[in-house]
Image 1: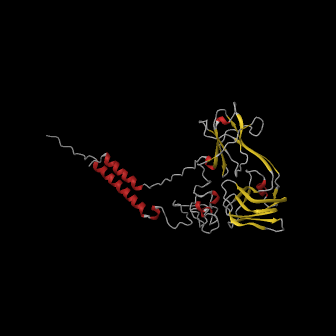
Image 2 (image 1 turned 60 degrees about the vertical axis):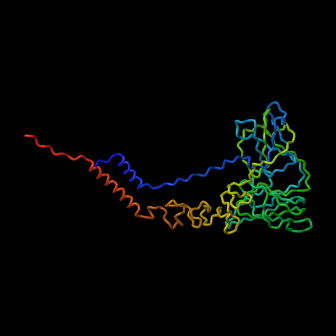
Image 3 (image 1 turned 30 degrees about the vertical axis):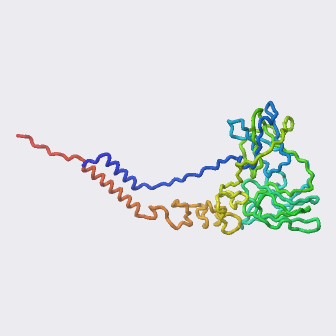
Length: 401
């Protein structure tokens, strides 16, 4: 019997399939490509007829009387269809104020002074202690009494609000550490308390995640101020623009190169324009788990269930139960220290806590032998077919006499 090509290919395929080990390919999740304009609550449109210029000119959109938690803006040229970036801009704020200056009582951490420097790029950094609950007492003093009823706390990007806040003050009637706002959960950047006059304030914060405070201010209600502010950018005649404003977080934009937007000479201040609600606005949610950053117990890691077994304000995904310096969500053995994260069988369970062998050939030691046996049998059959396929030699017939 002669083996044909069809039979040979079939038998060869059977031998190969017998010893193949399946490989699972995991697809990486796509990166977040949402536009930065989703970070802004409002926008203002500037049509070309509102900009009385004939040559490229730095214009200023008046924003007097407006208050912004985060002074970040995004300017888009609607007439330039060839660019998907933003125009460089400058937020000018000029204030003449008689507010009483305040200072932070001397602290071992020199960064605390950044809370009162009016610079949103600097911050006071408060680390989380080993027990998982941080507590900071911030004392503010002034040369003369300040009357206030609100406190604003601004944070750096991707930072959750403190767990609680307690506000006390030495009152004018002689009270020491009088409680103005008892320990309460923070749900926003600004908290209010009964109107009080004091020259010494004490703010106590508790927090479960690293805290970075860019600015802390007690609003002086007796301060007299005259403020003018506006947003400047280089405008082109005949172009329409849109300005996004009132962000709820720090925003990083890719912008054009900036010219001199600071010098007042030659700047055209246009008429004030009304803003509209940005319906595309999405509250800050760094990890995309549906929980806003200000309320998320694990800001940087996906945890929609907000699981917190030990009720310490830190989401279980962000904790490091076994203290091997790998957070639970990324730890293949969250309850057993294993810095190397060794996972011999590749089942995403570290060897330190893996009581089951996931590799088929290791769990069932007979599988390789069966595979080799089948392969050997196939080879023997192929060899036999090859022998039988050889033509038989015929004996020569004797010559006819």
